[in-house]
Image (cartoon, rainbow, N blue to C red; front, side, top):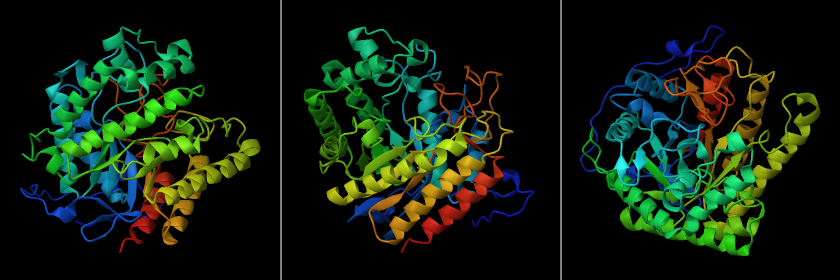
Amino acid sequence: MNRVIQLGASLVMAGVCSMVEAAPAAAHPAKDAFVTVKHTHFARKGQSYYIAGANFWYGGYLGAASGVGERARLLKELDNLKALGINNVRVLAVSEKTAMSSAVRPATTSAPGKYDESLLEGLDFLIAELGKRDMTIVLYLNNFWQWSGGMTQYMNWFEGTPALDPNVTGDYDAFMANSARFYRNAQAQEEFRNVIRAIVGRVNSVTGLAYRDDPTIMSWQLANEPRPGNQKVDDADKAVYVKWVGDTARFIHELDHNHLVSSGSEGLAGSAQDAKLYLAAHATPDIDYLTYHLWPKNWGWFDSKKPAETWDGALAKSRDYLNAHIELAKQLGKPIVLEEFGLDRDGPSFSIKATTKLRDRFYGEVFDLIERHAAAGDPVAGWNFWAWGGAGRAANANYWWKEGNDFVGDPPQEEQGLYSVFDSDVPSLLLIKAHADKLHALQR
């Protein structure tokens, strides 16, 4: 069913969406329904396929039938995203129970091999609803950061390493070094492969279709922002990381011959600023496409308290970063997706009442650059903005998440409202819609 964004000063998301007509999942999906790589681009259903996507990490949580689930909200969010021209969402597949305070609760995995079936059924429901809307999903299977338990929690399970929350200790170097021990721990790797088997081989409780056979899934992703460690990593650490990427990607392909596999890397920022390392980690044929992220504020390029003084420099560095990765994609001959980028609200403020003029300006610059490269035939395959907050709202005066609060685009390690795009951010919504349409117009 067609949807039209009504342009005008009074636009609100509740007025731009129509109901999606349900369609049962195909029992035997056509081979061309899966997203594939054709030369340096994606293809689907006989034509090129560009990603105009959103990060929606909590989508499976909303889909749960009980507990934290909010299926009515999930349907609304998916309709709104579809109306904006979004054709892909990037979602957390599993989380691990941890003592760290800045992590999501509840978790999919309470202990090795012990899964919360309600949350997994929530993922089933999400995938089924995406299929009805002809949207695709990227599922990441682990996390380098603490907000979903992730690699550090594996180390807590198998080495007894304290789950030290860097939001509390302030020591991110020690945290990253500890997370990277995950790649070397045989028990952690065995358990991670058990998780991969459980998810890739899962049969959807809604559609009856095995995940490995579902074309709604575009890609399995090894982890959210896997890194070889902190900035002090040596050649041995790098070699371990490269081997882990290749071995894990190969393992997934052995289980699933239908879907793409990606790493989830931030790019150079997640590769100790070492282009050779980034290339080595992604040279394996078992990594089908490249990823990179862009965070000018997090990386110290932009000071939102001094926007006039730091904007030009941040924009120049951002352009250089984007262009450098497109050149790396050319070297490897693989598509590349900018799957995370964002900027905070004006002020700076976490309040939903704050304007988004600077963020919208940043988004526009990013969209324009990607569209120019795409039109020129370069190996850019699209974008996923960070992140969709939708109808969620911060509940606390200090903007930090507590169990039972709404889920928004900002995970619990960050203030709620830091980078979220909410359904009331009309200028941002119009901008996203316009550029999603431009990207889709390139599909042939």
